View 1 (tube, one colour):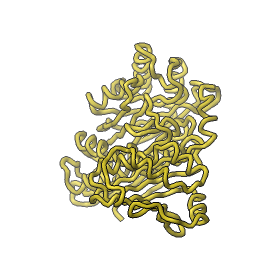
View 2 (tube, rainbow, N blue to C red; view 1 turned 45 degrees about the vertical axis):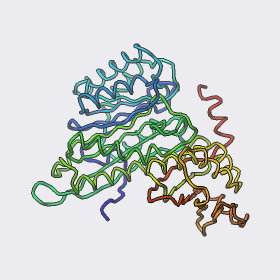
View 3 (spheres, rainbow, N blue to C red; view 1 turned 120 degrees about the vertical axis):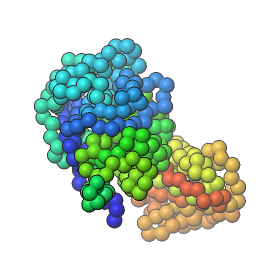
View 4 (cartoon, rainbow, N blue to C red; view 1 turned 135 degrees about the vertical axis):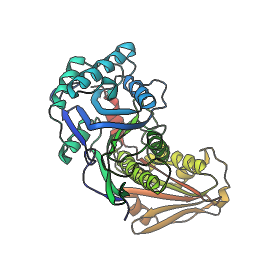
Length: 414
């Protein structure tokens, strides 16, 4: 097997360490800051929110990723988003990066930042600075440190999200070396494509040219993080970053060859794993929803159709209520936008003990209600829709809409 799962998260790759602390950003005594650090400067790539109200750390990171293209550390806080905070918010980013640079003995321009939480309030610089100094002195390359960092950036998440993979690539001398990829993400509400509402940080020890690193990340995000939806809201703070420090000792990847293809596949697997974990941990969620569209006329149309179903409030409510109302799925496909022939569509509910076809040849079919209830009682609900129009396919993930979603977001600021 070329791509293999390994234990750990952001510290799985050589030369990366992590730390976290309770800085009291919003709540006293809560672990709310995380730091990632590489022993050497990294090639860096990223994708960011499409929301026009971009948070100050997003603007800071965009300058580094699209300008210098290298970084060595990441500092993240939870509780306050540093969004819609004007020049003061940007100044705070600069001061935080300078503090981290001084503590880590690196340039401030190589410190990436991330924030998540309530939009509007200003972050307390004294608490950020305290947290930065504390974390800089407690960095560790252990798996436990990576896990702790992934927990520190949670807000309404109920579980931390982390994963790690390994692949084998050729070294300069013709031997084989192991390349590691690790990652952590957070996101539970305000999750919707372009680029969902989330923070995600990926690390790898591969040696790769920065343009290829950015190309791979930009490609895989389309079918991973951009294919999940919890509630239809796109945040101000969405950030996906990857740092590659080259310490694995592989022959540098400088062109789109077999090594690049394998790395891209591994990156896709890592991103999909984290994305699905986020979709399944939507605020108040009790079910993960997977919608696979097959035989569509184009890849983009397949994506649009799949996302339309997992984004539908009525489909989400239907799954929560375990109500086999396939008309809601068909409706979401019908208003998605792409043209198709309804008579060629086939919609199936996929269960652990067998499938149930709801619609074929232009008609809703009679089905076993008890079997449908058993399938809809599973934790993961999967649909397949064959469009009968071509060879393209795409998969999207979401979650059900529950009473708890309203409760969580009704008092989010408190």
